[in-house]
Length: 251
Image (cartoon, rainbow, N blue to C red):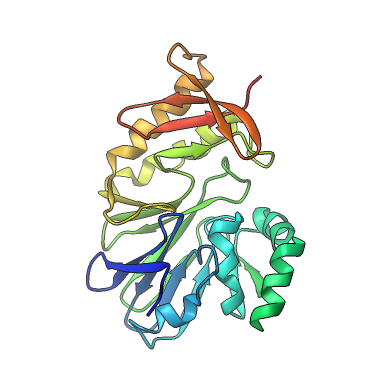
């Protein structure tokens, strides 16, 4: 039915949406409501995809404001995002090529609603708590699903984290933000990132990721390599198995 987005069922109420291995969204269904976490690249109707598995009222949330997490927002009327990323999301949605694509599909930019650290999405027998983790972007968030012992991390905790972007915050800020998750570390065993392709990551990624950020701060760059990306040249700090790396700006 859908050419790009493939659905993988994590358990009886969580589905992973893999958008051509380029981006990942999730559908989490409670007894009363369902939550869409990230809407991917927007080439296919995310609402229609969600409707193949649930007819519950839908809430929609962006983990941060980058295009591969927000462009599918146009299939919904309202989307939650942290206020610190509202401007960033708006900037990308105002790009001429995206505006042209939106006009051609007969959809529109949604209204953005604020979500803050500590907010809880109650879905009916299932709650997801918001944790603000600024770093990759100012308004990056994670969501803790205590019932399933899963942490949804967007691009804040992921095998390859980009910290070289213009909107990325100083590494010291990111390291401190990651530390705020330590008090709830015993409450998740699995991580679902903004680019998980099929299977959840073991939660030990959190410790490895945090340690790698600290190594960058400490100047432990012996094994770092030049990293080419669409915005130019940066440096990459590898940690553990491929493709794990922290990408950061060249000083």
